[in-house]
Length: 146
Figure 1 (cartoon, rainbow, N blue to C red):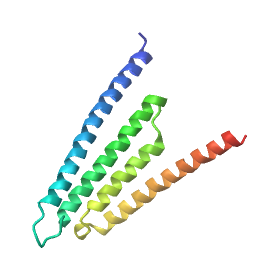
Figure 2 (spheres, rainbow, N blue to C red):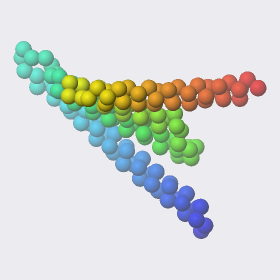
Figure 3 (cartoon, rainbow, N blue to C red):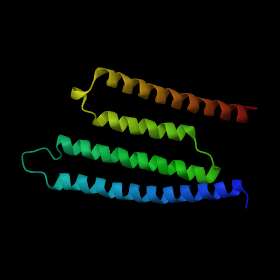
Figure 4 (tube, one colour):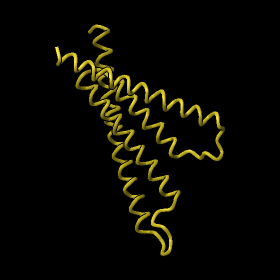
């Protein structure tokens, strides 16, 4: 067995392992999200909001975790089909992850330069995603238009 074949088999084993583990994480996170949501709804006390602000932040955080996990799961699924990681999906996962962080940040205790840095990061990821998406669209038009 040559070295290239060994590396390919190793990559496949790692990707399969990561996919199984990601499936477990997404499933457990989804169950935990449902539990927290129903617990918050059914255990609310009279005269109070159904879900408090902290509950909402926790639920949104878990929701984004599930979404990130699902997108990573989709990325690995595509890797199995085409044996290539798609930069478009990776940037989408990054954008979701940064968005999750932005939603959960406590801005009152943050340095203004950090907020500017996060804004630049979001703009850069969004710009990269747009360029790749636009490039893929142009490639498809040239392929089908010719």
